[in-house]
Every structure is written in C-alpha cells, then in structure tokens.
Image (cartoon, rainbow, N blue to C red; front, side, top):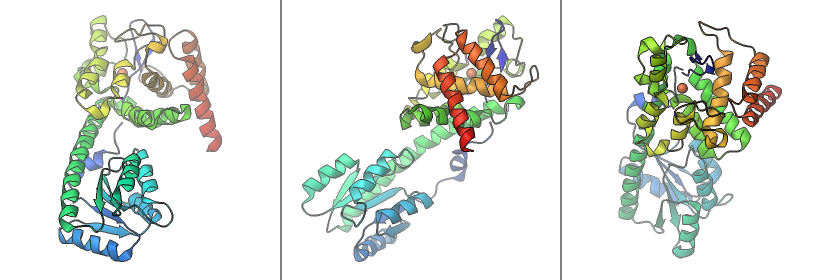
Length: 347
Ligand SMILES: [Fe+2]
C-alpha cells in the first residue's frame, strides 16, 4: 500500500508463482489425440492409424470415459463420434466448448452418411470440423494435421499470456513486503466475480488482472517503487503512469482484451479523484471496480514498513468508511464482505 501526497490510502500490488509458469518453462511436448467412439473396432482402427503417424492417441468408448481422460490429461485434439450410449457427442462437444478450460481443444465430429442434419447440430454445438464415416485415412490425416497446427498456434498465444503474467510476478518480487499479493488477488477477484454472477470470460479476466494489473510498474525505477510512501510530487507522477504503461504492454494480445480495462482503471476512485482518467462511479467499468475492492482489502490486511496489518474487522470498518466517503463502490464492498462471510461459514 502507498500513501499519496494527498494522504489517501492507495494501492501497491504484487507474488511469486503463476500456474502457467510450468508450461512456459517445460518446452514443447508431443501433441496428443483423444478418440471417443463407442464401437471398439472403429476406435481401435482409428487409434492404430493415428499411432502409425506418430500421434500419441488414447481411445475411449463413452462421454463419461472421455471426461475422465480429459481431466487426467487434456488432449490437443478430440475425434468425437456423434452417436453414443449415454451422453451424445453433441452434448459432450457443447459442454467442452462452454468450459473455458477446454474450449480451445479442437473437436472433429464423426458423422454418419446422412451428414447434413448431423453437421448442423455439430456446428451448433461448437465443433471445429467434421469427418464422415467410413473415414478415409487421407482425410483423417489432413484434418488432424491442420487442426493440430491451429492448436499449436493457440497454445503459443496462451504462452505469451503466461509470460506477461510471469513478468507481473517479477514486478511484485521487487517489493519484499507484498509476497503472495497477486495470487491472493487473483483468487479473491475470481471468487467475487463468481459470487456476483459475472460471465466466465470475465472471471478469467479477473484472474489475469490479479497478476497483470501492476505490470506497468516494470517501468517505475526501484528507488521510487521501494520507497513505498512519502513520494515527492514528481515521483508520484512517475508512479501514476503504471496503469497506462501496463495497458500498452498488454494491448497487442487479443486474449487479454477483457483484462485491459482492469489494468488501466484499477486506481480510479468513485468520486473522480483517481487516475489515469478521473472516471466516476459507473463510468469505471465493473471488472476494475471488482479488482479494486479485493486489492484494497489485501493491502489493508498486509503489514508494510510504515503501517501494521489490520485485522479482518478493522479492514471492513475502514473500507466501509472509505466507500461512504466516495472512494470505493459501496455496493461491491458490501458484496465482497458477504462473500467472505459465506466463505468462512463453509470453511
Ligand atoms: Fe497499481
């Protein structure tokens, strides 16, 4: 936490591990394929063809077995039969495409000869491509090869995301008093987003925002960053640039589209006294307001060289008073404490 020249409570962010980091460092693994086909002869045949081309392949015979396999190890491509006992291929496809953790896995639906109806349903369910039975090896290999290239490309974009989040953590690491801040922020912001019922895409953006909101501090010199409080007006001007710098670093990545407003606006105040744009109340987009509430709480609960850590109740009293005075979104502050109460009751 920082104290501005106006003597107001402001925020300093920052942690030291990110779940995507392992993927960044692990190097490229061989892409794998999951075949979901209830007919064991067809399943074995397809698996044999794919293995003969060097693709690690697992074959399962139901949607339930496919779900278990995906949980165990997510494949890079799924070949999915339409007609299966239990959950159909369409249902499984729709569920996988609705889930942010699996939606980027390409799915090829395997349809019967009267393909038109099947294809329309498959398109509706979000399938990426189709194969018609009986499957010709040439067609199978052509589809598999082009979709795996696409998957490689999306994985690289994901990796770029992870690199930026890792950089965000390196900024946090420059401040020894804020250890674990980004991770707590990411978790609490996601939980508050879900508690409020925001879309899953926005929940993911809040998680990224936890790691990336202070990325722009990479351009703030150590002597200013480590000072923490009592900045001169000139130093304060440099510090205040970090939301705009962070937004500029992340702007080229389309996958971070929803995170950009979080980065730019996480220091706006409801009464218009914040920065960089002096937005007021609902002019500040919802996602930065959500992140801001969990950020303030974390800052109040953490000890710094110039202030002790507050207990939960003291932090709640302080935040409610600051919200009433016009700094934070009162409704969101109330929702945040309702969420924390609910979490404590469950625990
Ligand atoms: Fe910040």
